[in-house]
Structure formats: structure tokens, C-alpha cells
Length: 501
Image (cartoon, rainbow, N blue to C red):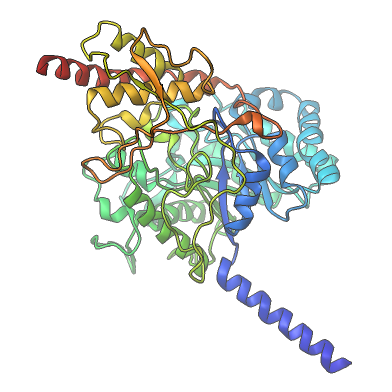
């Protein structure tokens, strides 16, 4: 009897070791954004997470349906608080107590959601925000912590603030010179001490892709792992990629200010697949495979060998996300908007990504430019403008997956995106007698760049249990900014085509 028990115990220990070997020390983690016109049902997303070995997920807000779907799954959750809530949360601890009761305590007790962190704000000290959230972020953090303690969750649920990597810098150009920005240094010291005293963590978002976008002289190879780029030598350390160098700049800043042991989480890191010449399938696969391999191997950085939790950004594409930073913002997903696979990834022991299951689509119909319509029609530009103001045309931009289409196909793409976004409703494919519906897929197999251009068919929200639209927020109002960039590209194509007729 005793021997049998020991044998079972030994098998359990060995099994646990094997699981850690497959999933890495902390397992895979990702960001689940919900700003989509046709979101995947949360139950399908949760199945997608589990099928692909994601044991942790970060939500940007306390989405009720997402949290309910995560109940009883064992997936660890970081719940975000949007920046627009920082002011009311900072103004009153009662407001914070009500928020915690509704969005944390309730889901833990009633739904069995394994909430581990509350993320207060989202990059509130970003330079482009100027001083908008400087006065409210820390008081909101303090009030949320007090509310968690009052709810009896002080040990179970920790607090953090996801910050952009621009909160620290290095005057020497080397990681060892890292320190926090002078304009927020005093505030950062207060926040770091508070996080340290309360068992919290610092969350940093690191984007090698954005480093490449911001600096035309940035060596592209240095953005990837296992690259051919010349290393950056900092004393006895050689940095072979920007993620390690950036992360260790943060670690140096912490060490310099007396917080060498504070846990650091990488809250967002990834690579988009569309919306920019540098955002493509090949580079995204290369970057994310290198990232996943590091996570699975439990690899840390040169200055901190213990691997941090790393949340891949993101899980699925979001066609209603703000495009103020760039067209690529809607294309960060490892999966397409419908949970289909963009590219292959080895997620451990040779296992490949698994697509979403049980997705229902609208009818196989597309809206295209009518064969007898002319690119020189005076109503065409206005019609394209209208379509792209209400639908996602970011794939039509320069260097994007559909950027090499001719003028007629460009118009067809715009018409179809509007048609699908409007659920193929009657009248949604009527553009001044310039359009018709077809049951033949108009998607070109490949364009000149060997990149797939997809004419989408949207998810049928009516065939799923709880159809919904993306939550409203100030960011949602920024959607139309990008339509003008796309329309300008289309205008050029239409004019060129007209001149050639």
C-alpha cells in the first residue's frame, strides 16, 4: 500500500515537471482585447486559450461576459481599469470599494474566476498623454488596494500599473544607465514603494516593433531573437536583442533607486501582421516564435535570470480599436478576428496552434464593385470614403496585405468591409449603383508581396448566444481618423486608373 502511494506520488512529481517543461515556468499568457465589431463569443475565446496552453490572461477592462466565461477554468486573470476611470477612483475610496465589489469580489465568489491582479490604468504616464493622468493614477492605485484589503482579498489579489517603457530612459545609451524619467521620478518612487510594500508588481509594456517604427536607423535584426545583429556590449554583458536590453534598462532603474527585488511583469509584447510594411506575417511569426520559445524555456534576461510573466499582445485582431498610433493597431493578434490561424507557431513539444471551434459565419456573400461600373464614376470616391468611415479598411494602406490591389479591387474591398460590418443587411451593398453582391470569393490568392489579402465574411452574431458590440469608450471615437489615410491611397489609385482609361 505504502509502495503504491509513493509510486503514484513520484508519477505526479514527474508529471508536474513535464508540464513545466512544456509550458515554461509561468505558462503562456496573453492580452484579450474586445474592441471588435463582431467579437468571438467569450466561451469560444476561453476554449481557444485553453486549447493553446494559455494559463494567464489580461483584460483591459472588467468585461462581464469575458469574466463569466473564465470562471472555473483555472486561467489566472489580470483585470484592467481603463484610464477614464482613474479620476473617479482617485476621488473616493467608496468608489473603489464599489468597483472591487462589482468587478472582482463578485466574480471570485460567484463565478470562481481566478483573479490575481488588478491593473490600475493603461500606460497613464505615456508622453503623448502629457499630464492628463499624473494626479489621479497613484490615488486610484491606493484606493483600489484599500478596497481589496477591505474585501478580504489583499493577499489573493495584487495591484499593478501597466506602464509604457517610456517611463524610463538611459542617457548613456546602455541598459546600465537606466533611470526613470526626471519629470515623473518622484511620483515613480512613491508608486514603486507602494507596490513593494503591498506585494504588487511593476508592469512594463515593451514593443520592439514600435522601436523599429520610431527610428528609421534602428537595426531591424536587433528586434528579433536569434538574429545576426551586432550585439550591444554593456560592461560584461552583451545584449543581442532589444527586448533584453529594454527590460534590463528597467531593472537598472529599479536597482538604482533601491527596488532591486520588485517583481516586473511584461504586460504587452508582440508583433502585428498588417497595416504597415514592417507589419507582416513573416516578421510576426519570427518574432512571436522566438518569444514563445524563450517563455517555454523559462529564460530570463542578463540582469534578472528569473523569467518574468510575459503577456503576448494580443490574442485576436480587433477591428474597432483606435488607429491613432497607426493602421497596425488592429492587427496585433496571433489569431485573426474569428480565431482562425494566421501563421504556425510551435507552442511546446512540437504542438501547433489550434484554431477556434464552433464559429458561425454570415452567408458566403460578398459586396464588390459592379463589373459595369467605371472607376471614373464621380460617386466612387465618396462611396469608398463612406464605407471606410464605418468599416476597417486598414489592410488597404501602403505596404499592407491588400495595398497592391488595383482601383477596382480596392473599391470592392471597401464595399465588402462595410457590407460585412453591417451584417450583410439589406441596403448595405448599395453604393450609388456601383456595387453588387456575389457568391464567388473575390479574395486574390496572393499579391505581388506574397501576402494574403482576405475579403472577409464576418461572424454571425445572431447565431451565438449573446451577440454584442464593442464597449463604448473615448478611444472608440478615434476610429475614423484612419479612414482618411486609407481613402487618400484609394483616391490616388482611382485617379491613376482613370487617367489610364
